[in-house]
Length: 229
Image (tube, rainbow, N blue to C red):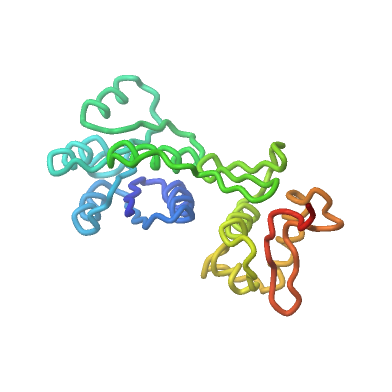
């Protein structure tokens, strides 16, 4: 799925893009209305996340043009709380509306919900489970035996890779590639520090890890549960 994120605040656009890419979307960014329209025509995205207040052509005019040309789902972003702006956006054909400040995780959840609705997809479970660990990848939440666990973004990415590859040996390089991305510039052994911190949070007894076990000479393996009866 391809997503176009158009926002003149480059930091917001960068953060939203990073979160969407983490969930498997291909993302293109634009920082003004003219570029947003050009990107839409060139990339043909499956959904557009569109800020109202942009230089040149504002977001409302971009939305109007997009709706003339296509039925692409549109999620509007704005720091303005005027109800009139919200109504105008919805009347122009926006599918959802998010007011700043917002959590990037909220944007991801809204994107997934709008795509399910507009593309007629049946709701799917986004909860990964293995042993006592459960991950809700939409809500960005983790529980251990039903108790909420607070993870950093890196820890969350690592745990997601582990749960998706349960019982497989994951080398440090594979973890860097899958969980941290090619842009990660840390040393391989830095992964050990992240895994150690993750164990402190998802192991019932961190001094005797049973979930994330080390495979000497190979890397790590997430077994998800003990081998006992």
